[in-house]
Image (cartoon, rainbow, N blue to C red; front, side, top):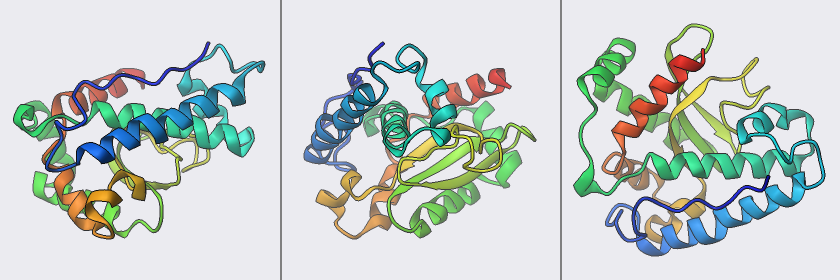
Length: 209
């Protein structure tokens, strides 16, 4: 099995003005492509060359750093592209999802502020995540370093949970447009979230428990 760079469901310029075309093009064609190629090279002729990316992630903590970094980079970007959508196509969270968020975080605005705060205050490169915690069936917000993600063992105990929503905090995700203004990039993110995909991620995670 070899992993392939996925096609996006939108053109590179369709997330403007929130993420510019050049950033999307470089992010997808260069950064994500490198993680994909490096992952394929790292697992070639090993017992991981015919298993799913999720199974590789669960093993990554006992493998070499190259496998961990590139399996995370491959999975995280696949996940990220799916939860983005052009602003003109974006709809609000469904009543079902909104109730889940409100029950856990008191209100959508409280959730939004907490997620944004964790993303803003994360030091260095990494990701912010909304996860379904497998131990208590509750939503939780965390950040991870570099290309780590909640599915990896050892991030928090067994694993931190099943990712529902994620935001790339690496500088290559925003620096061409926002430079050092990470807070503006995070604010823009809320205008291009595919809430139908987020809800799909949630229902799939519930079924995995």
